[in-house]
Image (cartoon, rainbow, N blue to C red):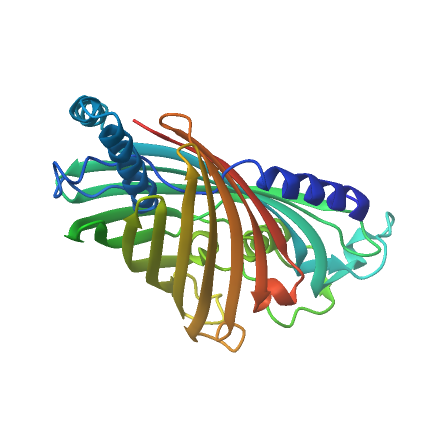
Length: 362
């Protein structure tokens, strides 16, 4: 994709992000009537509270309709959710490029080297779902699928696609004060992502001496992690098993919601070819949103990722911000945002991302 087309895409998606939606969540139970009802998927909770409080306020204004409205709300209580989250990103990644043009008469003499500044565009989907299985207890699943195109200087573009690490999640949450919930989550990222890590020093490697498709998929995974601002690296680490404990607070008051969380991504190598057998990352985030109207929310998210174990390239700090908007059509929540890295590898490699997705409760 040419730079001109990329800029047109980015401008269009930036405009869309001002009128579509950003991640909020799915409706929860009426907490005043059932304060200990069970855990819901984490990103569902903030919107659930604001939705309930808005409905309660309307009920007070309408006098006798309050009880009827609360009864109807409980009747249609949502205990699960499904969502599709797409991030489109543009920036530069490590990539294996040919040294010169191929010679049809002697293709075996072509050599390849690593280039850390290869332009790319990437589309990463995360298909997710969550279900309340018992009071306070929920389970979830996330499946990442990625497509990417690379445009090395002086060589033909190459495209690839692949699966990321599938993450299983267990969650326990409970109300600790009026309008405030504490949620603990444990995620296990199964090492099914495709690709092989490109060696830091790969120079003049003969054609056929390495698995080019595996290296391309590693570059694709790196591009997806960059585009998402290094927030969910466990989903995009080939040959690593992720153990991700997480704790979050969910507070809301009328139309305002505040959601901080802190997690540790323990990325354990499953292949001896990796430069570092263990990579550790501490990730903290904060989301603040306000429902201007029952069907429209403005929000902003910010997060950091600090690597505390691994190689020198892993022990860095990244940060990003994401302005968001959210719409609500009953149980359906389309959303969008603009991801803006401000520090660390995603920023150093010139990445920018646009998020579009939809979540639905049932």
